[in-house]
Image (cartoon, rainbow, N blue to C red; front, side):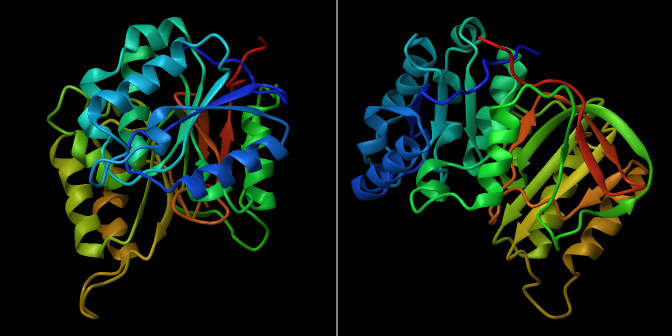
Amino acid sequence: MFKPKMLRKGDTIGLVAPASDSSKEKVDKSIEYLKSQGFKVKVSDSCYSKKGYLAGDDELRAKNINDMFKDKDVDAIFCIRGGYGVHRILEKIDYDLIKENPKIFMGYSDITALHIAINNRANLITFHGPMTVSDMRDGLDSFSLQSFKEVLMTSENTLEINNPEGEKIKSIVKGIAEGELIGGNLALISGTIGTPYEIDTEDKILFIEDIGEYTFRIDRMLMQLKLAGKLDSVRGIVLGDFNNCVQEDKEDQSLMEVFEDILIPLRVPIIYNLKSGHCTPNITLPFGSKVEVNGDEGRLIIKERVTIDG
């Protein structure tokens, strides 16, 4: 996998809106936060655009991403928010251009589809982490900021991913496995199945999270991955935050019962309650990097440096 240049204070962060729109006030507040952290900011047109539930039309949103990767003055690219719309632009992204201009690319939620496509087609490590409007406009919490800096702004060859104090990373299935970390939002992952952009899970460590889904829907999406063969060859699974994923009816299966039915029979190491996803704090994870999942001790360790000096 190609590695982007490490982020440093004084670097220019390009903002893109690949999915849903936001307000000018929220975008401007997030820009001020990034500047307060010592970064320069370049804003694409999509960040201030609106077309129905989208941040401008598909051509604009895709062009802004391509242009930010091509722009030599831009050091990293952050998404302002998720929502909906990324699947509509996957065919319009220039993956060869991205491969030739590797940069930090960060977001989560709907941005999952871009993580999968860029990992697969440009062989670039990308970052599942906070977005500017969604998480930064009122100031990033201290733990998320620390995680952001540890992953994007240090040159460690190994780095353990830790939860905040009082939030234990727990184990469902014991064992230790290594592989490339991939994944993201479960709904978006399942939405890639059967397309040219579907997730590659072979010999990978699969990370999944979601928000606001009834447990029967989590069941359905996991079964879609299972029936598509996407769980057959995973080496391990990391379950992130499942914010407000509850039973529709009191007699429905609980979230843990769904995991036990579908994931435990895979007999691979599984940990859960990693605070990454639609939650605060929101831990930054490097997709495409080599990691170790330790189901004996409830640990996740990045096993390689994920950025390079530049």
